[in-house]
Image 1 (cartoon, one colour):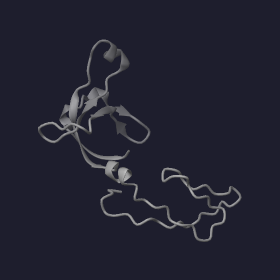
Image 2 (tube, rainbow, N blue to C red):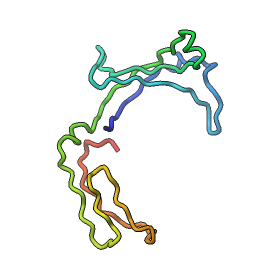
Image 3 (cartoon, one colour):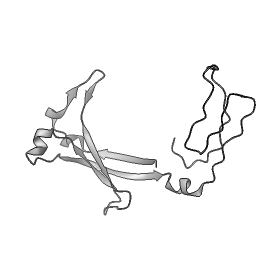
Image 4 (tube, rainbow, N blue to C red):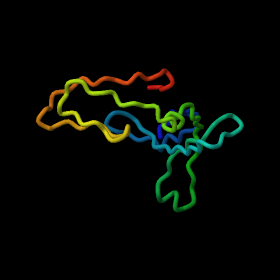
Length: 128
């Protein structure tokens, strides 16, 4: 199942000592806890915490809460409807029809040229 989740953190709460240098920038490890069935009084579905080391966790230390998250989109209703129809292939003889919508078509490995597949019409409710 896919979910669209918006995140909001208070950067002033970040413990600077937990920032680390990576190859492409400065990083911070965080964890998100999400409950799609429950919302708090502000409509949030979860929280974002700053990660702590395994040693710190074993000593009972918990990560600082940095912010919240909201689930703004889910494909749960779309999956349950089952209205998706696989487009019919026109011209690619190496194409094998998937058994269900979660499988991708397989092509004969001898034919490595990219094929232009027909795209299903998707309504504007999908955020990507």
